[in-house]
Length: 318
Image (cartoon, rainbow, N blue to C red):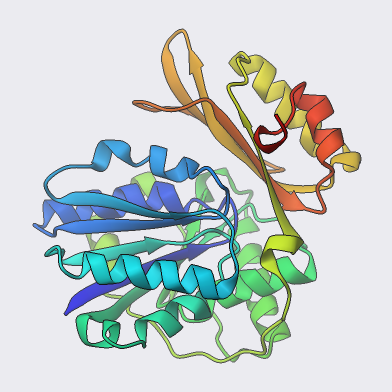
């Protein structure tokens, strides 16, 4: 049977960055891996960040764009059926940050997938700089994506103030309690809190053998695609300083709504770079290749106010 690992995490937590490290580690141990990317936006930016991993031992498949639950499950089931016939040792599923993980478990229990795949590790990425309070929907997603995890891996620990990572872990445990889940995480047992450039081979082995847990919780019923909005802009032709200024202005302007994440690609004189911003952090990193696209994800977004800051209509309005 093919092992499937699920890499979960709220919007902007750092799932794709960890996935790169995980794939390199697995490939070095002779594992032939396929990444199944499932992004919320109509344009899957994270796939572009993984293109240089493609090779004999790594492939990438995608399920992009928002759709209803039944359609989404059919698409995922079709992808997994196809992948089962291609000789992979491991399939790594990276869902969007608003994904209902129960959809994934339901698909794996279907015939014939239950005979072809086995669920291995569920690794939940949690941002050490997570906002101290999310909306009820955000709190629920934070909890539900971690409930079945064998391990929580904290991101951006090197940027956290003293005690901030521990406070974020306590926030996660409160969110789990709020949805009546008995699961709790502790830094000395099932949560790893250290800068990722300091992760050792023993740390990676620990993550690769963390498994998953059976956990129940009370579901919060809401339409993720109505609660969370994704707006995207193509071919902006902005300089990096202009784009950084625009991102700061968007987060600072309450008229734009509650922006959770801004991500995209930009070409500079030095080559392509990735912009990844949350309310408290903005990260720019050089990448091998890209496409000029900016995606803004949040709650109750005001399209007109955001377009005014960007100086361009969203791609679906042009």
